[in-house]
Image 1: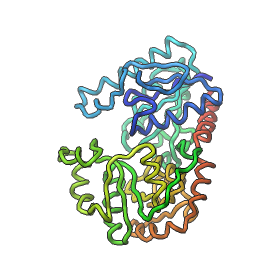
Image 2 (image 1 turned 120 degrees about the horizontal axis):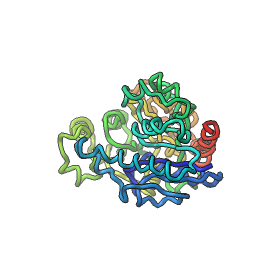
Image 3 (image 1 turned 180 degrees about the vertical axis):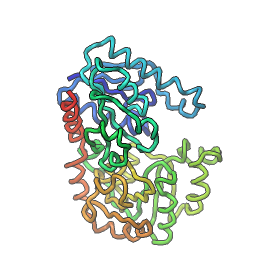
Length: 367
C-alpha cells in the first residue's frame, strides 16, 4: 500500500518545537512504514522524517505567512495543494491519500474526481470553525473523514458526519518510552497556549483560593517568554486575556508562568507535577497534552467536557468534574491516583503503534 501523507506547507515534519499536526504525522509515519505501508510525504523541503518519497513546493515552513493579511497569505496553501494534485497525476502509483490540511485538503480531495485514489481527511480541530463548508460538504463515496475523538464527531454538522468512518485517538511516543526519573513535586501544571478556552485564569485564581502551587507553561499568542511578552502587541486577543485575566494572579510564588517549554524540559516538568490541570472552557477535540500527561505518569484533573471523558477513567487515571470551582479540591485529591495506572493506560491505548494499527484499519476499509 502506498499512501500520500499530506502534512501541509506550514511546518517541517517533525517540527522543531510547537506543531500539533506535524508532530502527529511524525509519530504516525514510522509506525505505518513498520507495518509495510509506503509513505510519500507532502510537506516542506526541510522536513527530515524518513519516508519513501516527497512532494514539496516550499523549502521552508510557511507558518509566518499566517500572520499576514489574507490577500497576501491566500496563495500559500493553494500552491501546496496544486503540487499535491500534480504529483498524484504524474506518479500514478498512489493507492490512498491521507490528508491533514484544514479545509483546503478536504475540498481538494473531493475536487479530484472519481478517477483519483480514495482519500481520508483527518479532522484535528474544532468542527464549528467552517460551518458553510462542513454543513454542505459532499465528497461522494471516495472521500471519508475521521475524527480524533468521538465527542468531536458528535458535534459535527450532519453533512460531515455522513462522511465519517470513525475516530482515532491521538498517540504520543512517550507512551512507549521509560518515564524520566524525577521526584514528584507538590505543584500542578497547565500546559498549553494561554487563551480563554484553556482556562488559565481559572486555574490561577483557584491556586490562590485552594492553596496549591501552579506552573503555567505555554506561549501567549506568538510570544514565548517574558522578554517577548514585555513588548507584545496589546491588540492581540491572547495578550489582552493574559494581561487582564491571568497576569493579576501570577505572583511568581504561588503561580508562575515559565513561557514555552518543549522536549525534555516539558517532560520533566509534567512528570514532576502532582497533577496536570485542564480547566477547560471549550470542548477539546483531541487532547494531546492529556495523553502525554498519562504517559508521564501524571494524573489528569479537569473539567469533564470534550474528549476528556474518553481519555480519562475518572477515579483511576484522573479526576473529572462538571463544576469548575471544584477543581482546586481535586488537585489536592490527585495524590490518590497511582502514577503506575496512568502509565499502564497510556501504554495500552496511546502508543504510536496503537494509532498506526487503527489508521491501517481505516485505510483497508477505504480500499
